[in-house]
Image (cartoon, rainbow, N blue to C red; front, side):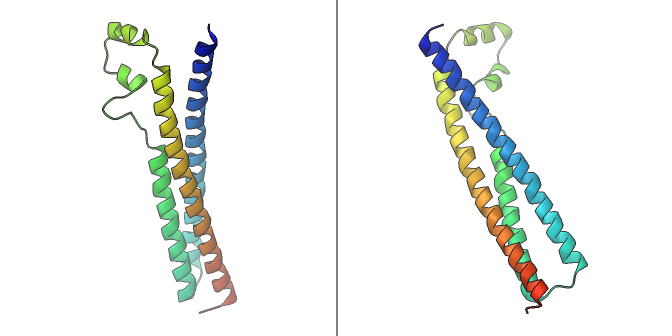
Amino acid sequence: MSYQDTALTAAHAEVKAELARTDTKASLLLAFTGAMMAGAWTVATSVHLSPASIAFGAAGVAVLLAAAGLLLFTVRPNLGGARPAGFPRWATLAPDEIRDALSDDTRPADIATLSRIAVAKFGRLRRAIDLTCTAGGLLVIAAVVAWGGGA
């Protein structure tokens, strides 16, 4: 195996690992977002709240819903569109065609495509984290207003 072949294999594995890492983070954050919404719903339906705390809480839940939508879009499978790479393309090929397709080294193109997908996923994940933090702040304000009895 040449140095370039080893480097391509390592880069390909690294990009695939980053995609998996991003999906794992997004899934965990999606579960956390759901738990925050469930907690907010529980509090909102079991305690008498002032209009101000309801307004802040509703804004917090709306931002959480936006974060959840962004997270769902982040983990949504991307099969590559009109020119899929890897296994989606293989699903359309006959066994002999797969053997021929595997004889070509498509790792450089796969690395570029997967890297672009990973960067886009990281960007959406970062925005979802920002939204979740904003929603948490709004829910804390709602709790402080409710606890303080503010109108």
